[in-house]
Length: 295
Length: 311
Image 1 (cartoon, rainbow over the protein chains, first blue to last red):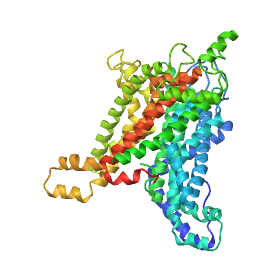
Image 2: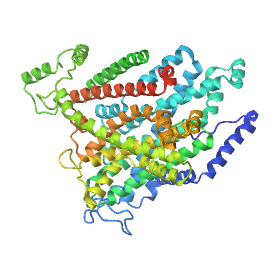
Image 3: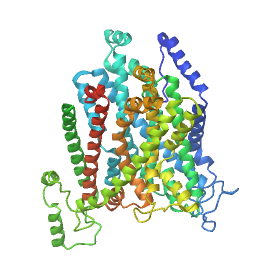
Image 4: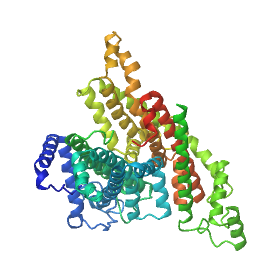
């Protein structure tokens, strides 16, 4: 997502104006911009957490115990007297990292798979997409639970397992894009110039299919973050002493009767992040004029 | 139509075989044997146990024997609860989960279709914005947050509804069903709004209106059939989602269903239970996807040729 398509001199004029149009449209969508701002803020905080966190992550204060929000502890403290804001900041690092890294895994596999299948066509395409069909029918949530049981609750595995689930739709979208792009004259021109298929896919096909990919990527991140929260809530995801928003919500729910803030604030940041990503995704879809990426 | 159903059935078989095979071998490479948690077992007892669970045979033979049992509908004994079979555990848990999923689906369909159709009748007015904003909220508040919040509000502060259990007290099924169904209500609302918006501009709707048909009949008789196609297509994935969503909801509300059994089996490393439940749930999901596809093809004949392929 962070890569901007490389424009050669020849396509600079058309290319940049298309992207500028999209940017202008996006700028008019206030909800999408608000989502972008919230997201940027959360990411910035997550990156800077080790330097700006108000308290030490593991620092307990058993005398204080669970205290409601106050001037010292803006969001209160948990039952061990640990600062909740600090916990949420560190938890956000993991929740956001899972969201972005797993989506990146899904993006790489899905785009690669879809581009090759769509470009190759014929029998290779049929076999590759039939495999996607079969995988689609599998109950993946159950498989992730299974994987976490079998391989222990390993964070890296969590990233990979979630990424491995989410690439299927990406592959379908990419394949459809490639199939329509293949017919275009500039691709035929590249073929007749004798460029290798990989170069054609990388330089000419993928940059032109970026719109739907960006939109779907933005909409994949929240569903991945939900999966992580879901697993951590069940105790099968992130393990203490590490923490994530899903785990904080799970602990908050256990003591919500006495200490409702322990449920409320982690829940609020998770919901806000999901809102931000969904609004940004919807805004990008309208701005880039992509149809059918979701819904 | 029969050919369509037949070809879909044929596609389901390799899917199930992949599930069974992958699950079976994954479980075998998991660390820790089934009896490693017990204290030192006498060798003879261990041998007897292993013979009972067929662990003394070569892996491939175990696999073939397991497939043979499966064909006869036997999922084998539970590792964790000696003397109880996985079939019994599933038979105890599944009716509860099925009931929960059914209520959640009813909640999702009634609220979702209602809100979506109402919103689609006057697009870009308050009648559209209010239900669609509510749907956005529903999508962004996952069940693991919604459940505790509902318990806090309706169970503890207002004290209207029981906060846990299933069938023990009147009204204790309401909160779990709403928690599980809320997200799907939101998705269904968006799908049915989009579907209705597209259908209501079609020529045949204009014809129906031109005949002087009352507007409610136009919407209900002609609009819904075409407009709800995306919702019917969504039912298969939604059902799979409801089953895995029941893991969280049953844990929150302490509902003794299959989802909670599955999570507990995962914690206890009750491998035969995990294997059996995975196979069982996969069969269910594959079946439901099939039913959803067939329903969809029946409602929308144009799809019949296309659905079999991947595009």
